[in-house]
Length: 166
Image (cartoon, rainbow, N blue to C red):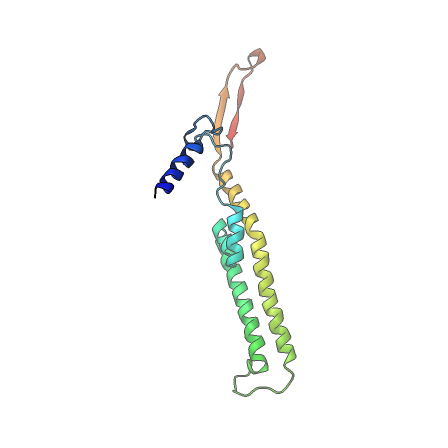
């Protein structure tokens, strides 16, 4: 026990306490140099990769996100169903139609591939959707200030206009 206490005392004396050093911080916490974006493109990419359409929903494009989810899940599900059921799946009488199985297998694989392609395309577009959401947010937060400044220039000219603060 004494050894542990001595090791703690030696390590605390040897290590610098940088957290208490106020001169070391160069960026003031009130004036941050990097502004946090409204929607993070990396988070949208991760969400869109995990769940189809979730990146678009996160970015505020609800209809596109929901449509992508439905298209992806529906296409993958229909392709898997066609692949598994084959020529027995479209006959409601209970008997299978005679014929080759390969066209149904090929159609099922193509359906699953189309669903996966939709998912990948949605995940690749999710960061751009977040950037579009950030641009919409910046445009909505613009402030317009009228300028009426008489006699500000040479020969008693006046300035009249609008100032946009971005």
